Image 1: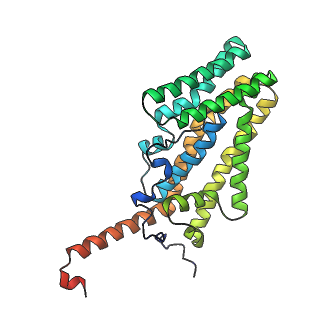
Image 2 (image 1 turned 180 degrees about the horizontal axis):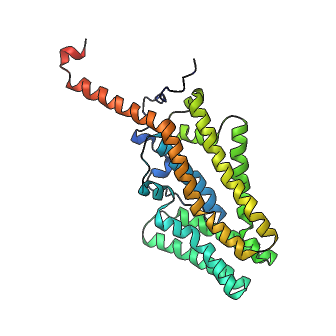
Image 3 (image 1 turned 60 degrees about the horizontal axis):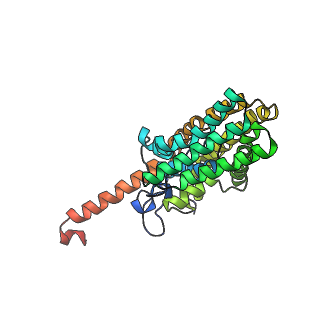
Length: 287
């Protein structure tokens, strides 16, 4: 029998509530820092969607309140955001000043190497900086092969199209990926699909992210084909971290208001039962 819309999300098969420490999303664990979407590196962008997006909605599903620090963590922190946006901004700035392709593509590579070395010196996980550097190098190679500075941003279109299409298909087949991610990282599995209200919320949030990727393509593709590199670079910056952060906040609020409260209430009820059981006399607790 399907759960009613007001029912709480059931416990996982292991008997752990979504708020248990063991069910924290992968990106909350040590050594896996989320990285926000930059304006250049495809590797960093793909990783940010997996970690930042899933991290935020999974934490919201456990009932965690939205705070500045929580959002910042989902975006990779100040250092992660700097790693994401600075290489693209440096490329754009150097090209606007010099209009020299070779000089412009060397600058972001140097920045990327600097971030990698800084992480090694600080003894921080190097995977975010390494994936970002590889993405930068890939963009640089494409730009040098074509001889067009605007092609430095080409890979971003494929990344956005792939994520947007993948999320849209998941909605069409009635397995919205936001819900799948929450189910996996919080330990509730696919039980959310049996609750009509929760299913609609997961579909809505997934479509919100489809809209983000679609909007990027609609705004930026005409600028790319017109070879308006300055306008394209600015658009990618504005629609990168700022827009991503806005969607993280909206997703967090929507998910927490729909399922987070149920999860939080379930966890509190379970804790109260345990406390009551421990406080009751041994004779009464067996009745």
